[in-house]
Length: 385
Image (tube, rainbow, N blue to C red):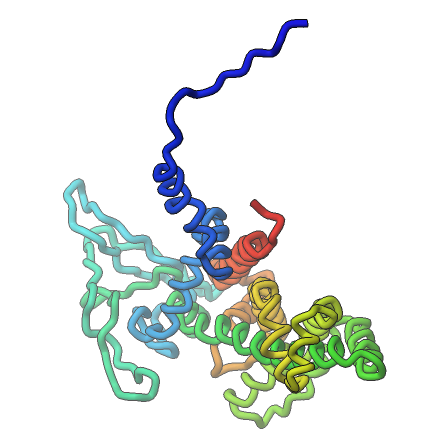
């Protein structure tokens, strides 16, 4: 029987070279924190990274919506009711002019009382940038009139058309982002505080505390969410100020979202409370509150963050649905759901389809949060490579 040949390198062993290779690759991962490892794994999910950048830009934009909007929130143009979106052009009669729009002229049909708009192709009106426009109050700190984009001198700039009162849809969508995006963050924050506290107590103490929490969560999860949302929203007094209505809707969404998180926290704590480090903390005299919030919760905080990213779009959709049905936020508060409430009839869909455009940012934000949640969930999974 022939012996299997072995190939052995005759080169001398270089210990320094081996250490150098390990220091640049292995030690980089060995010395990295858990948060850094999660971030590196998250960067591999290209769609999630793009979605995170989109959400970062969106939330940064809500800080300066007054500057980004061409018009003030409630600015009315009675001569341009239900005006269609104006197209942006670069060339006029073969020559480059730059970004400009053509002015709109309308004729009124006396039989149907419908306005028909046409572009005046003889007068290009250049769009202004970083210009002085309609005055606004910036976060109540002072008056300003600087805008990123302004309508042309003596013209209009309705990039997404106008509504039944002649208000610019683009400006109202940008203003509405401030409410629709923040209500998800505030609602999830309240939901996490309630869910982590109740679920942490149930998972750590067990016994009658766990039994009581389980029965409450089962009852809440057995009730259909939409009818309960409608009932609680309808119970809000009509005399409440817009600010109170905003916090009332946020509290309702938070109170109905915490049971799922509480059960996830409870199951995790059941598994972790038997670990040796918990026993050591109890023997050293640590209080249950310190053990739960200092030792147990940080061990699966990454999973909670991933859950939060998937809960925010649910709350945004809930607020949009309630406002669309007229039981959520109400004017003068402006959100994407409030804007969509004006497109509840077939006339709006058939004659003025641009009134449905507030649906587009809702879809984009919900998809972005879903992709970010998928990326975080994969990044925190120890079995993902």
